[in-house]
Length: 173
Image 1 (spheres, rainbow, N blue to C red):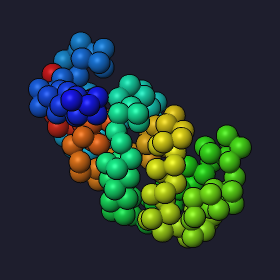
Image 2 (image 1 turned 90 degrees about the horizontal axis):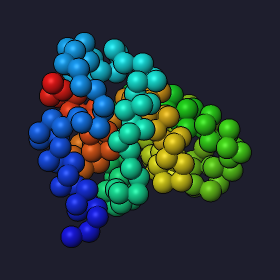
Image 3 (image 1 turned 120 degrees about the vertical axis):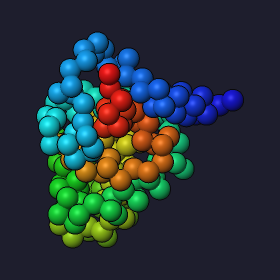
């Protein structure tokens, strides 16, 4: 059994059991239980989301063949203005690493380097690039712009945020 398959099984088992041990949170405080994703996104801070994603995002364990289609599908479903915000956030953080928009446009074969004119496919390429090459930036953008997560449908891919997913499902006890 590959490590990817083992990881998948563990995520599914943890999610099924509502296992949130890695959160290091022994409280039963109902203020940390969320009705749904929107409730989670509205009631948590960027720092709280950053902490959750920092503990649960493991890019080396989810192959590109699973992650990239999920990112494409999720980004295609978010509102255009949210997609613009996601693109701007990726560009901002990547620029801090010395990667400017024009260079990324060429390197990733984007249709434009203007966030407001990018297609869902362009933003997906940008997200995938960050996920595989700069996972810390990917986590940061997820924390700042959590709308992408709402549309991840593959349970294995959703496992990158398994702790938060268990809380969204109201299983945090």
